[in-house]
Length: 249
Length: 266
Figure 1 (cartoon, rainbow over the protein chains, first blue to last red):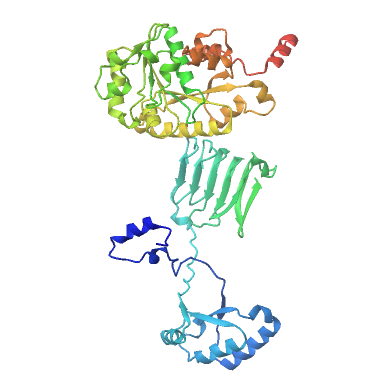
Figure 2 (cartoon, one colour):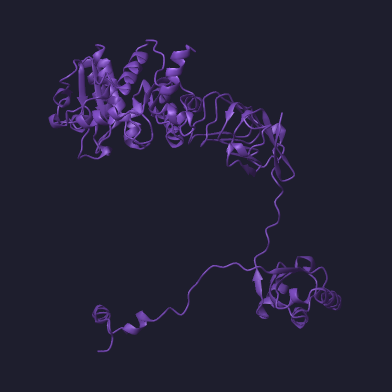
């Protein structure tokens, strides 16, 4: 026998004559997740002449960008309108792009897309209104007098957190409202946990490892990285746009 | 309760010397090894060959408490309750430990029970700290030891019986061991002040880094009995402070500076 692995043969013998070659063959398929960047084209009209014209001028500006670019057509803006999808696809191809699928659109548009072998991508989740805490709904502040030690977590749900003992490195203090700390703040402090961008952190001795307002955070890798006017001094942390600002008070 | 969170910082050395110190001052003291499976206390106490029964056999009611207690040959009023080398730490139960402690206090009249906690924050350490009235937190002047001590202090304030039953909190003391004033001055080691500032508990003692600690462990004589060593003296001071005496801290400045200070009287 020419097979160099007789032991495996023996093992497979009692499977009713199954061929060893099957188990040694490379699998024909292997599945791996991967992400691609696709360009989404929002259609605001079903007028194909206009689309053709606009596309031609866009492609003329940046031919390399559109060459073989995979496109997803977002039909949200023309739901319910009559659209000659086969012709649209031909126009897009003629300009060198590769339409690969559609998103949104009404049922008949999606059915037509499937018949053209275009993928129908899941609908985009509508943006939820950002949660903003309502001052009237705040519960009364939580007052914490003990030190908060490494590994401990103190959370003031629905309101402010007032800390009278030190907050040590490796601990976490969290509040839906503001955080006030009247002792060294050395752990992680997170205010506005439910998305209140107005929330602030106040500390009499700021040495925090991390500060965060409404999910926007700033890591302080080394206390020495803090500007001298706020390091180990009275300071406040607030949000300006999406930037976490640390400033003296 | 002698604890630290981190291993190798000197819990067992401290437990042995602290218990000897209390006994030398006339208090009936038992020192209990909670490090089931990794017993060391009996080695440092120099009684490992006299271990017949242990803590676990008492918990399991295989032996009576006074069969397992080993009386120290050097110091009166001192008894060792060794850990089991072969058992698993899971045999410890709160009920069992509670029963042993009650018997030690009420039936056998012990004034102090010194618990040598295992490292870590697992079951053994939690058993050791649950019944604590006072805790001596042994910390080396380096950041990971300080952080682990902080973690243990947090657990003490949340998971001890005093916390669970809303009694006065466990009284915690900071003992800094392996202290080297020269290295502190060079900025290579955290200072006592720094450690105290971070942990926020009062200092009960500072034990200098010393070869006599290792020597004492190897011969099974608690270092407090070595009155010539700085470490031994530091432990003596610590016991006095624990009992309410006022003893200024020693060995916290380097030798060189100490001499200069004496010369210039500053």
